[in-house]
Length: 242
Figure (cartoon, rainbow, N blue to C red):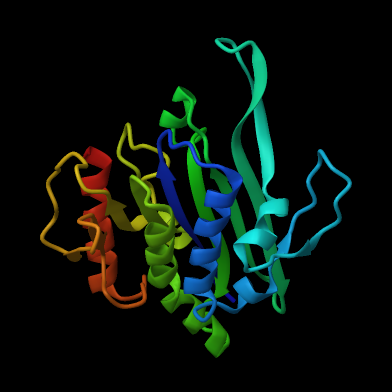
């Protein structure tokens, strides 16, 4: 049976926030996604390699989340001391048929390295669906955009995207394509983001925060549907030129 991996990723630059603020954002996100994918109710926080804490169920209340946020420390040359530069958390859920949901959070980073999306503040959710499988797989596929919107609402990122592994495999990446662009079929750009040429295919709309959401389709992505595939390919080509 064929499967697909979907990743929803949000990223932003330097923004100093303490553990309590990060926990409030995560709790808000979890509350918004609790009914759209069963995996969020089953998530277990990965043990922190720097502590002896065992794996435990991911709580939902901000005050209960704070102890699970691992402080990431670095040496501040100007102040000549070690300080907390950000907070991280990794959690996952696994259930029947090799299905899984993985979440990774890095937030509160405020030094200049946070300008780089791979080093900076970010939240990502990755899950697998079995195509043609159970009803829960169709439900999970339909959850991609609600999860993406929950990430945007809770974390206020500069950009966000949804990537399909199957879409990635079907595309031929133009020379110079940024790796994080390849396979994208839904994207968000915060207010003030640089303008670029949008393809006439797909669907665009402004979110309440003024940011732009651009998707290949308003429906659940079906890469066996030539209309969806054409719109996703055109969108990818536009993003690759950005």
